[in-house]
Amino acid sequence: MNGTSSEEQLLEFLYACPVGLIECDRAGEIAMMNPHAMQHLLPLAGPRDSSNLFKALEEHAPELRSIVADYGPATGKICDGHRIFVDLGPGRRAQAPKVLGCTVMKLGVDRLMVTLADISEQVVQEERLRQADSWFATLVDGTNEYAALTITADGLITSANACFTRQTGYDCAAVTGRNLADVLDTDPAGAALRLSEQVKIAGRDGWHLQEGWQRRADGGRYWCQRLVVARSDHADDPRPSGFSVILRDVPGREGAAEDMRRLLTCDHLTGASNRRHFSQIMEREQTHWREVRQPLSLILLDLDHFKTVNDTHGHPVGDILLRRVAEVCTMLLPPRGVFARLGGEEFGALLPRRDNDQAIGLAEAMRTAIGAIEVDMPRGPLTVSASLGCATLDEAGGSIDALIALADERLYAAKRAGRNRVYRSDAHAA
Image (cartoon, rainbow, N blue to C red; front, side, top):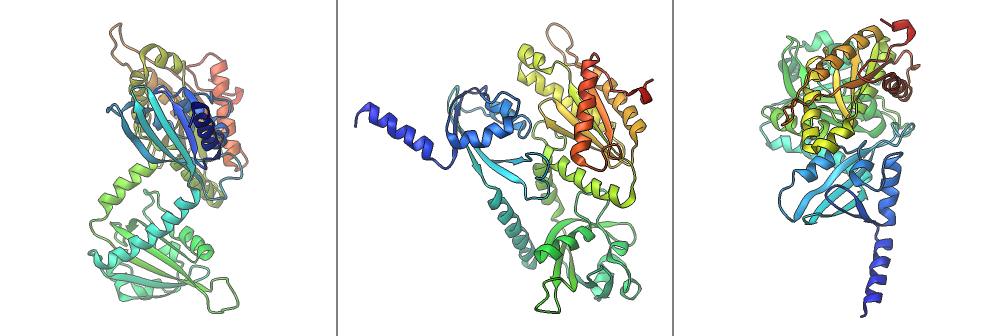
């Protein structure tokens, strides 16, 4: 076989391969990319540089650069099936998330081979199987007895067993006829779905299972598995006529579950919430806003001239600054506030029950705290500044996409006005 035919066969393989293949150097500069990789990468890159892997994925997987940089061996598998959760804009939130599996192999000192594959359906099935496996594993894993309730389609409790009282502290007779959400709900400090939301999903899918902190009648909490199963009294009517709810007290599981929660919800570099988790929380708080109409504000911030920091001092120094920014801003958050890294040097803070004036005040505090950060360098301390924009869900007409767009517009208005400032309209000018 001559060299030309080998090259032709290689090209045929690259074009026919059902997985995205990318060859790049350690800095992410792409040398080769097959058509499937282009289909995955180009929509994610948007206006960013699609010839650099890390820059193209900056919005959706900013942690990938540091994962590669932290890998020490000369060759080997850097990550295997690293999951990149993708939201391609309005309309995607009503669907299951698109997920790409990313595997990175280090072939030499400055040569990487990357694969990208759409694993969205696999992730959905894994989640369902994980839930079922978790549930049945507790049958032989030190699980305490279970509390059982039945509720109507409207959520009214029709019966509860004696274990319900022992597990939660609520009297069975006293709760009969009351709404389940009024009697028993998840710990408001956690990120788990509310029971009413679980019931809605069970009505759609037939059942739903999750773990999380559960409140007792005396205010204490315990780690609980909650299974909600739809019931139908009529075979010819698919709509549920009611639900069965099972609660299991699972001692000793919260540690492992908390580790998994951090893995799935936190940014790899900074420890702040990741983009996907932040998006999920926004959707949940949007639902609360619709129900109770309490204020909901968003702060977006972007570090000024951060590319110059990376270009001049290197990405390790830039990473130190990013971690410090996350630390100081997280410390300023009010109760229920969430701080997230949204991509590169862009961060966001979601502020339930805070209006625009309160958001602007917190944004100013964040700007001041960021400006006070110093990283010791041979030629003197390195500092950084930030530009910030704020918006409320009321201003955005209840739309999450409009809320993000408005805060982003104000963020860049702050940059155009000179950077290192919080955007203020005439109505909020100092």
